[in-house]
Length: 192
Image 1 (cartoon, rainbow, N blue to C red):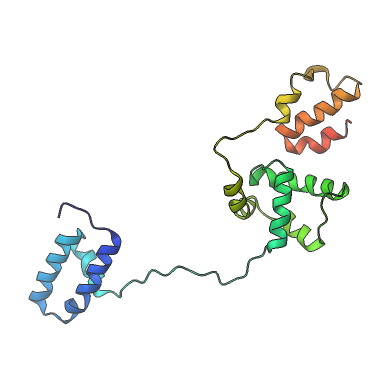
Image 2 (image 1 turned 120 degrees about the horizontal axis):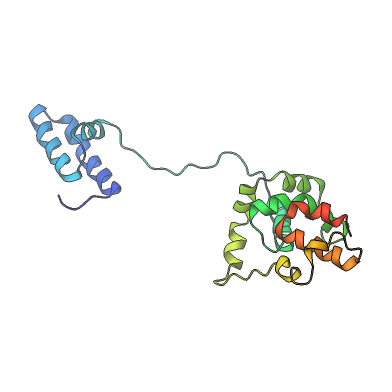
């Protein structure tokens, strides 16, 4: 045949022929095998394995273990994600140890200790997986991303901002580092 068969059609054909193939004699098996090879495109030895084997049932594997993260942890993660301007999971993971205490300190977020530990223990992949549905709802066609770094760069002379004693320069430098390098937040905020 010139056309290719899909996997499901091949499986249906094998299921239809399998019982007759097992009950057939040698010459009948050869004829059925040749027809099966010609119609499916299988190699002869593969066709013999398929016809002599058990039918394959494609069942979706079910998860046997319960989820570690409940709706409370997921809801708190969504709040943290929104507060961090919807960054990706990898950046949010690096930002969580800084952002979570800051939001709790300023009274914007109150978490139970178990939920707090769960959120801080999450991997970046788990964060991305838990935020998949909120991302799909909030994602628009145009991506607006105006970072603080772009706003602060023209206002702050970076070369002498560290040496300058003026408080505004140091504060702007702090915001400059928060957008580009999240790990510098703690170090740069000590300048203010």
